[in-house]
Amino acid sequence: TSFGFEQVKEGNKQPLVNDVFHKVAERYDLMNDLMSGGMHRLWKDAFVAWLNPPQRSASPFKLLDVAGGTGDISFRVVDRAKGNAHSTVFDINGSMLGVGRDRARDKGLMDNLDFVQGNAEDLPFEDNSFDAYTIAYGIRNVPRIDKALSEAHRVLKRGGRIMVLEFSNVEMPVLDKVYDLFSFHAIPKIGGLVTGDAESYSYLVESIRKFPNQARFKAMIEGAGFAQVSFRNLSGGISAMHSGWKL
Ligand code: SAM
Image: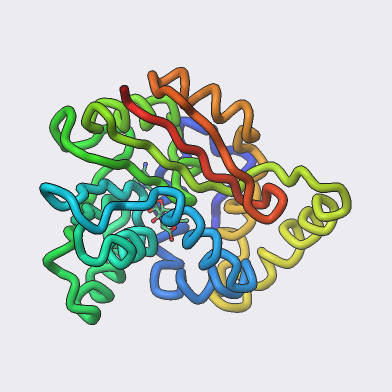
């Protein structure tokens, strides 16, 4: 393709991001398995376990799953809540949402899910309307992270919770070196072989590298007005999950 990744300024990267996920949508789930050796499933399980949606409540647990893509987090939340949850899968990319919608139909879960296209920086939802806001492997793609976080704060109810799952900073000696080698060399190669588009995967590796570390990202969430912000590392920090509350 014709993109010069180095030349794309942070603020202008959205069209590039859209193009990447449009190209990989059909093979997105397969690619996740190949590139993480299936680990992304365990990380997502741990994330939803920490969220711990209730199996019983006066009204169904209301989730907004931003950058929800093909719905991995939403399906897990509905499953863990034993159906006592409704999730809005929200994504800027219609191709990713399309794959998710097909999956929801196949699983007979259309009552628990809906699919809305739009930008995390500008949510088309009312103030104080969700019990939880999740964003998994999405926030690093958003050009203005502070805008996305303040929108998250706006749409959550008082007592609502934000949870973020993202690739992070490996905090284990040796593993960090192995991970560097793997991500710089293997990920674009595997991506190239499976999707014919190595460059999209070089972008993904770059975006992981630029993302703030655990402590800095925690401070950004606090900056958006959230309280009791904490994080947990997964696999030595290859991924990390952050949690905060709107009080
Ligand atoms: N959450 C899903 C998961 O864990 O499998 C999908 C993650 S995927 C790596 C990142 C998603 O972020 C893509 O579907 C992409 O379209 C979406 N995205 C990128 N920029 C966005 C934005 N500004 N607003 C909403 N979604 C965005």
